Length: 152
Image 1 (spheres, helix red, strand yellow):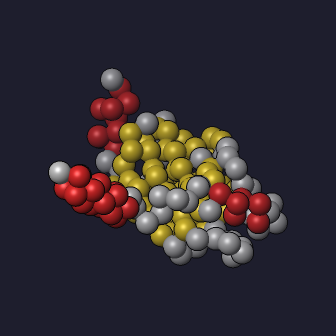
Image 2: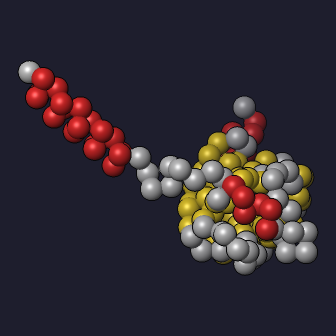
Image 3: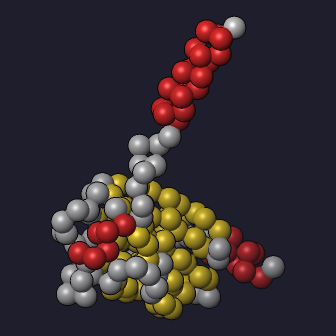
């Protein structure tokens, strides 16, 4: 009986080690630029790892986030809040039913990865993780769908 319990305990420990994601030990620092696109709040949560990389990012070399909104939506930067310097910009582009988001992280020592989560009117619509310093997301922008959500 004791041997069976020992084997079960070892199996639980070994399987538990493999159950955690590879980046479970990483701490992230984050920024959250918020945009207004035709009356809808678009929040782009940018998380960088490890946490200490925030100290290597400077106002002279900030993280840059550019939101590309569909024509006629008059996008604006509402606010930028977080752990590291960031430049945010909003502009229209030629794609009617698409929202584009470009994030550029400056080349800094210690950078390992970025995770980006996008929310529209408080609802998560995308999440992506990469070890690269540049990311470009293109999301569907269905104005009728957003109007229904916005009017409720």
